[in-house]
Image (tube, rainbow, N blue to C red; front, side, top):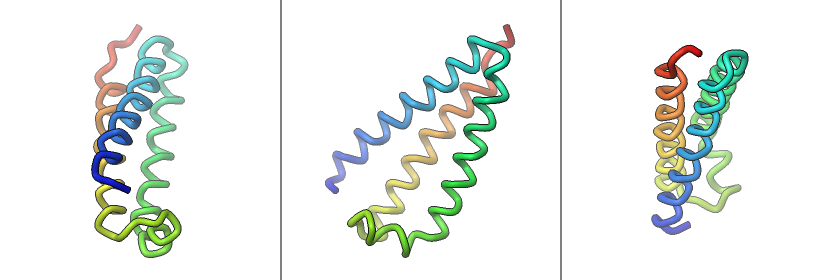
Amino acid sequence: MQPAHFLALFGLGCAGSSLIAWLSAVHPALYGTGLSFFIIGAVLWFICFLLDDLFSPYLGLDTRSYHALMIAIAVAAVIGVGMVCLAPSV
């Protein structure tokens, strides 16, 4: 995986988390769903970060690239969580 791929994956993650945040802001019933989606994602991210030695060879990445990918996922999710939490109530 080239470093340019991380930029594309970061953009995809930001777009996905922004979509979830937008859906949470549009409909009040989806606020809890969007927030729970990010909580479940955070738990899965933490598990994947702890098991990096297991998943990095499976993905064909060295440990440094795997950690860069995990950090990009975390930053994209933080952007989405920030948008969900700062969304005005309808």
